[in-house]
Length: 354
Image 1 (cartoon, rainbow, N blue to C red):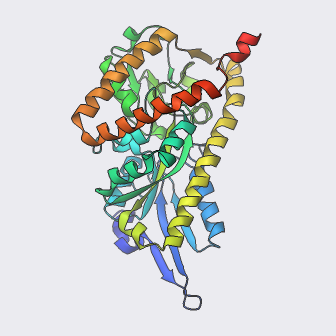
Image 2: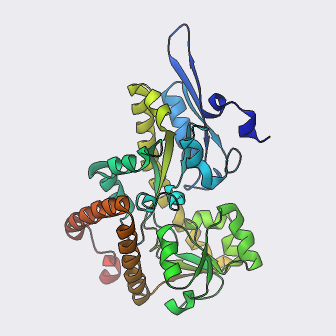
Image 3: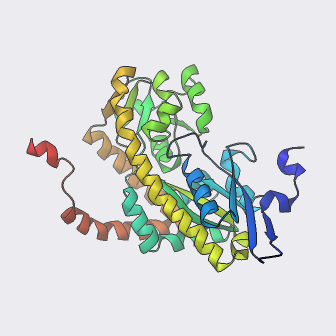
């Protein structure tokens, strides 16, 4: 019998007690995660959140973090939370794409918003309500709890100079970006992060995307694939959510709900800061490892964008929830770009000055 089978449903989901002296509710939730906590920015953010929640609650509210696969498979976290086998989990909601088609829109969108733009949409333009409505029918309350910037566009065992080279390419890719590459003829597979290195080393896949350079280096991709492509067109932001069983969420006091949401919001800010701070040093070290960072030329990016628009339109036509969320994001981006174009320096401003 597995670990979950050996535990009662009550023990699996939550431990809630009432201190008889102070009449204060004490909460301990077993919380599996989709990413190893040894991974900088991608995985260690939940550790910050759990520690902050413990400190802010004076030890009364605990998220007991379990590494990927210890309680449930990394891709099965939301299903376990939905079934009340676990009270909460920390994951990338795009893994639910097969069952809930709109989830990539609140996780990572090809040619989508930049991280701070996404948080503006999420907190101030209806994104939060749309995410909650999307998961309400699945007995889950999602809380935005982390965000990082663009991933790399992938690690390749050989250089790629045209879209035609994606035809027949064996590549690990996730989310809507994977649908785009499938449309180009690629053989796309989705495997957990801990299995990617071996697949690359043995030639089971020709290329992979996963996360930020600091994460990919930690997993050893730079040892077996020497061509690292940029920019991360397929995931301009990567959002992580704390998913809470809806009944468990509603069973919390308003104060504890607010405390959990505030801690996750702090996690969003700290997560983005940490992710942005760590990448420069990793890229500086590429030359010493024989890694070549390469930017896709503008023509390839434009072609990828055209395929992306077709894929998004097809998904919106098939699923009303996808259509609603995508329309909301498009409307916000259209409005936001007025400010973005006026307020920020051009990205190539320094080069022009030289």
